[in-house]
Amino acid sequence: MKAYRQFGSLKRGLCVLATSLVVAQSPNLSAQAVFTDDELLAADRPIAAGHSYWMEELTFMEIRDLIADGVTTVILSTGGIEENGPYLATGKHNLILEAICPAIAEKLGNALCAPVVKFVPQGNIDPPSGAMKFPGSISLTAATYEALLTDIALSLRQSGFTDIVLIGDSGGNQRGMANVAAALTAQWGGGNTRIHFVGEFYDPGWVETERFTERELGVAESGHDGYHDDIWVTAMMMVTDPDQVRIAERVDAGLASINGVSIVPMEETIELGRKMVEFRAEFTANEIRRVLSESRN
Image 1 (cartoon, helix red, strand yellow):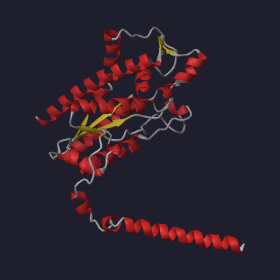
Image 2 (tube, helix red, strand yellow):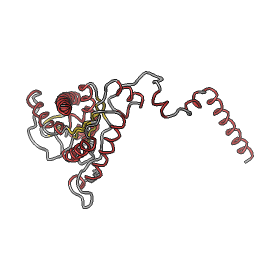
Image 3 (spheres, helix red, strand yellow):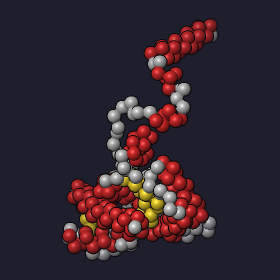
Image 4 (cartoon, helix red, strand yellow):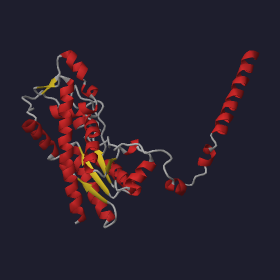
């Protein structure tokens, strides 16, 4: 017991010594602690800027400087957590947006992507309806959803963005986004920040992507397996993560197709998904440019 106590004392002493050495070697630690908010907001970046179209992957200084350089549009996208049949992960819409939103921002040239809003209306919770009959689905009431979007939009306005663009990858998301855009437009009046609901991303964006795939890429479904699934969502999800469509498990089970379209070889389906993403991103970027131009006239 005595030996154990002596070891404990020695261990504590070494920890104190190590901490003292770190502080002694890092004099800036104490200096940083006395920065005021205003000083920190005005400070230059101490390192080169990283690059991402996703706000959550950037530092506040990187976002600040991008806005100052004219990156004043932000895309706020909504996905969902819902039943999508036996093959697709419940985060289907979020995975698609992970592929498409940066592609849209790149085409616009002056935009970033806010974090995807993953929680949206999916039906009544109790008693359950729609997707809420299936384990894993998560739903919000319309009031909660609109309050969430409102607070996020207000935060983006506070950051200094002048154009906030709402897009949604699921049908149940559309009305709430339209309501929030209308309410905040009225509230903000003729201020410096505008908010826009670009419903064309969903309709006719989905249909136009399907037509493009059939007309230009020669890929068309020949049947329906009966699931909440199709070749378009599967291919675009695979651009982000093939595991989320259970590609390996489906190959093993001899079920590597959807609605009459094979999803192997995997590399070919991912390339198909990239072409879909490219088309839908260009289609949406054009709609956003049109909406922003009309709002300024």
